[in-house]
Amino acid sequence: MDSSSTDISTHPASAPTEPGPRVPLQLEDWASVLIMATLALITFANVFVRYLTDSSFAWTEEISIFLLVVLTMNAGASACVRHLHIRIEVFADAGTQRRQRRLALFGIGMSLLFFIGLAVLSGRMALDEFEWGDTSPSIGVPTWWYSMWLPILSTTLSLRLLGMWMRRWRAKS
Image (tube, rainbow, N blue to C red; front, side, top):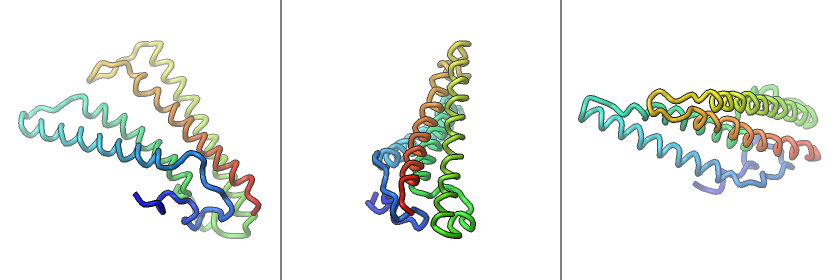
């Protein structure tokens, strides 16, 4: 992993006066690497066992879905801070610096509201699963063990977005 992959100022869409994030992006990068490696190992083990025994590990799908959700939220935070998230560049990069800044603030603000809402609603879902004692179908562990990570990761992503919004707000251009 080279240093240019974590420098947000190399992307043309990033504001030239915007400072980088305080929390290093390598945290998300390494978490993504570890999650992808774990997914590959679990999938390989399942295919290998299925090939040799004509049966599969029932738990691999459950763990894989959980890891993919964690990977999605983790990579979403990294993409947002690096300004690599999906947007309509014809509108976002056109016009004056003032217009671009306002659109960026609006876009970051809407994303922030979405992830705050996701954190609240998924937190309520995890709490319901905890109170009702739901268990997973293949392993039989409480489902809140999986669902509690969605509000945690949504909150983490919200904090990244809040930091982006504040840096963009403070930027002079």
